[in-house]
Length: 290
Image 1 (tube, rainbow, N blue to C red):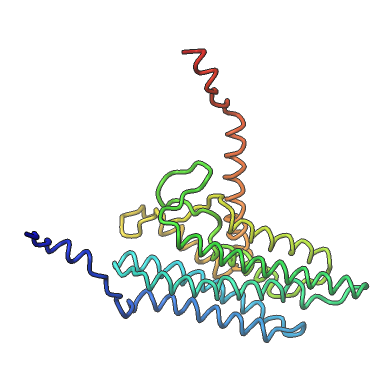
Image 2: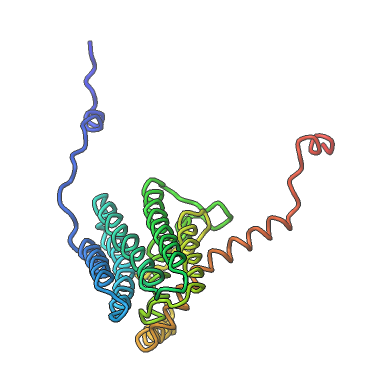
């Protein structure tokens, strides 16, 4: 005689239905992120050697997109509206806004609009190398997003506190923020010399490498906005926003570079700490001492 299957097991065997629809509030911020990225692409397309201010507008749009990207996740977690659809939607928006848009901006600003140098062939080669570096940046950003989506509990390879305090590799919004901050620092004026373009080539490649690396970067996810904080923190945040409003070029440039080099600093600190520590005893040495 067959025993009846418990109701709980019957429910577990049934395939879960895909929930249709989306949560409006976090999706609005993600849509704003995508809209800013699309606007940045349009501004890069309209840029020229005379109308270079379009590049500065593109950099500003990417900066606003970084803000929207940080808010959609925060809002989803605070309101309990996180979903698989929201995560996939956010990743697709990030590829456009923080992958395609900054790659086009980096190539147009640093190579395409550069005045021709004495050697025309060298100018063409430098533009081609810039296109390769921009594509590698885009590919690194997309790979960074794919790795983040398939990793359930990412942990940095070098020592760090457990949990979600650190990102494994530079997040793609920060990588795009570095590109946008440098362009905004120059107010969109394209590079004019070949040696500065070579420096820009190395920087774009370095940012792409940091995104696919396993170096740790602070995530700011351990900051709880719902808990109480000292009143002086509000004053510091207000002062920071005021500095960004009046001196956005220099302040955002400094913030982007500090965050970029923070991952390099933590990596070098871990390397020196590992060298200073004595190596663990081998199996033969441990057996002789016991």
